[in-house]
Length: 333
Image 1 (tube, rainbow, N blue to C red):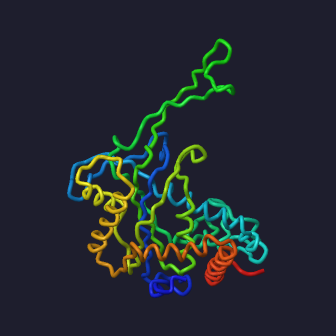
Image 2: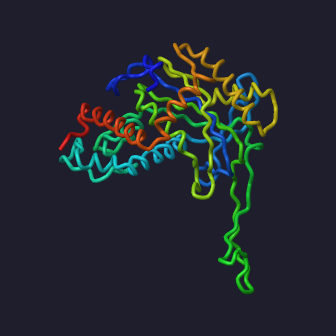
Image 3: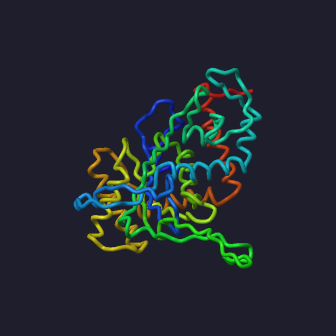
């Protein structure tokens, strides 16, 4: 799998970092009226418009936890569907640092981690005295390309009765409220970094990105987001931040007002990626265009066939279990 890029992958998940990074360059585009908020209001930041255009503007922010949590939960759903947690619970024990050994009953997000599944090992966890694992996935907050004034809308919401009206008998409900929403087709450029990837862990993170469609608050009703993969950068170090990517894209549009066409937005993101990586002082290989399509097709062969998908999911699980056993986080029963 991904044979032509083997030099950028680790043979197994290492305990100590070996300066190998896989950076997924994404364009997260809202497909509906999304809500990215904390404490009741949309998250915003006052920042420079561009790297060249130094005017201060307000931008919508998609906080990092609002990106990682949905993607982790997508992966965990699949682990549960295909019996990975059942396999771990049947065959392994969790070794708590300051507690007696205890058998795994389940692996819960922000609760009791098993310590050995792909989610625990790749994305990390920290649970008091029970132990911790540093995340191998780095995601920072993403910033909308257009200004706040051009990327949100205040909407009036109501709570009708069962017949669909706001009136019951002679009384009219007063259950009205207002909520700011992110407009559809607002782009949030984002870099997702995987440190010390193996082919299997690389595909695990990529699969979560592909499959995750709902982000932010009220995900059962709104929050659809489309993740466009613009490029992959294999490097020996970390690269540019999300804010710099957003600002560079803004400069390339030269003041053009949104909404932006998808093709144009992809082209500007690709151009920004190419220019910024040259300034980062790392040795790198940039994958784009036909080479990127080739990687995606190779991934699709595995991810779109249930038999191969199950085989691969078991393979990545064996990798993370071996890592956890070596780190003495779990042990076989």
